[in-house]
Length: 489
Image 1: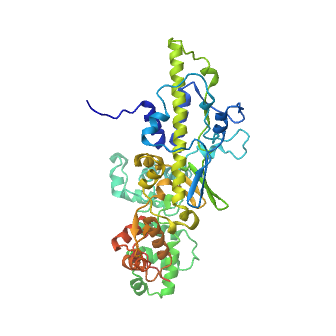
Image 2: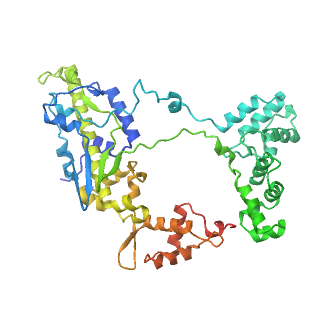
């Protein structure tokens, strides 16, 4: 005798759909539509008999209101789900007769209509131009011999995405066939021609050469041109270490003059290749939309995310209960799978709705006042509120996004650990990061705040944070150390 956990295929499908992102779910739905003839997309404008109450429920989009210390969902189907209720919500056997509850609205299709004048096919389907193709296009317009063109193509292949030449000229020269008798001077001459291509600074072998190439393409009347060229050629290391006193002494410049020279250098692009976008843009589709109506925060599913599905009533009508033929068995199985898929989608959206509503309930301070008002929140808090397991909450919050008046955030963004305060309360790590960012933005750039100083300022506000913790939060925000944030006023 023994105990074991048995997961039915239907339960596995429901759990798998729960953790899919919106884009992955759209692909999953498309595959289901192509493989199951019982499933079909409900097109806009199709009418259904509303005499059945289930038809009304299918047409109402889920919306939840969050006000004061309570929240209320407007759909009757948003009841609490516990781990043991998964099998009860989705029975092993379903009737084969068509029912109105087979129709479940998730949203209208996100594709534009045929009469949409703003729809541009090329902007949605064309890939970005790579740096190599951009340079080769300019090479085809430049007159040169076949040997020089071969050298130029080889050099362009050695330029990385940032615009720098990765291989040395010696390595490139050694890679040519000895019968071509290509000298190092020829390769360098072709490189100088490539370095005149756009974007300015491409083909450089180091940062100093990259900045110098860009300075040479500026008008000769540009103020402080010669000083900037000398700075990037001879003193680029001192500029990187921000040793301004040494720079003023060696270049014989006053502080105000050096500041103007540095401003000219900082106007250049240290990564010229990044101007040519080669990757396709990635769009974030929010799963949940949060908006404020009077004093209430409303939570609703994004009705433009995925299509509306239903069981094809004509095909479902061909299924006969007592018939055991192969064709009838196939149709009955397809009908069973179609209903399972629709119920899994419905369960997924109901769970997502409840979790998002609870998150908004806990983080109303963030929605009203920003990051500094973010409260500590862990998965256990939401799991306890909705009556689910923490693993289920983790699946729901992975790759799911919420559109708020403050921007689009992943649901996991609202979860953070806590730090004790002097008064015995708790402060979330997200709020501490926001305070650190605010302190750094207001610091004296001549004397930037060290991690120890920031820890002291936080302690003065009642937040007890160690210096190494401040350093960890600062690095997560992409803020450089104090030695690298020093500026000339």
